[in-house]
Length: 206
Image 1 (spheres, helix red, strand yellow):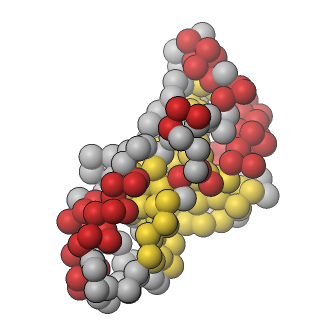
Image 2 (tube, one colour):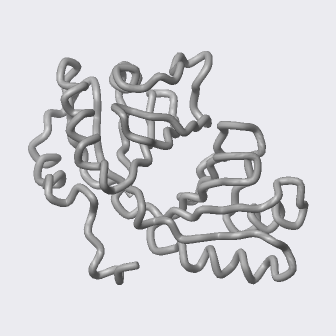
């Protein structure tokens, strides 16, 4: 992994900060990049009480065990359910190494895995009154608020890109985790899909 001073956002070439400075005050959709979100691939047995307790102690949030749910966000940390014994831990950028070290220190005799996956994906934040309408143009998930609401997440495809979609708020607000190699394409697709509602580019959202 690159040193912190060498890191570059997946969307740095789009100069989003400059565009945010001249963005309209209101729009139906707001787009931003959460460029340096810490991401940890976490595997372990959900039935193991020591594993669950250590994860909560280190990250400050409980391990979600219901399919396609995410924990509450506390101090920038969140756990997203990916499978029966698999989660993504999202943490403030720069903390991923310490979190991994703390997990291994807390569980010396428990079989589990925690791997830094921060460089593999970026996060595009999509929010605004018409955010759901934009996603529905390219995602086959049922995103009706009665079915998919704040606190839920799911792996799916969006505009033919594999994504992890996390609804973080009722506005609605979404974090879209996408692999770096598809980030430019997906950002441009989202802008195009949102054009009819008005788009505002916001500054970096970490």
